[in-house]
Image: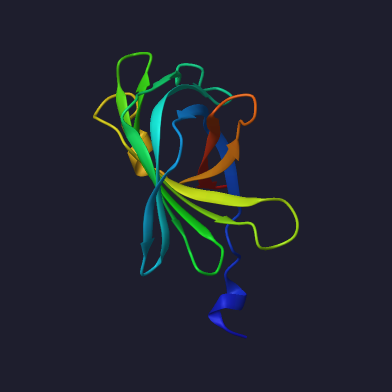
Length: 156
């Protein structure tokens, strides 16, 4: 018997914090570099709303951000998006969303991310102190946008 056998692993839970409809401009190719094909997708706006119990976490996605993409030689895609979301109370949250997409395996599309939030002191500062994972889906063909959902990871 080892120490690992004596300690019960914690239970992990997820709570949806927000879902955002992020409007995007056309993808621009930046050429192939040593790690793969480079692209950039401008973020031109959007809206977001809080998950259950977080009704006041709603607002707009500010234009001016971008999603830098790398299509790796193995077929996986790495996305690194940096943008701002402005809450209805005027608070501006900086979002860094790093996504890995693997469409080389059968089954549901694998598009998961780690989201880092930088929030000023105030009612949303706690978001800067949480592990947030996300999902990414396309809104096409209805809209040139992606749907990003952020989930707080916690121990129960």
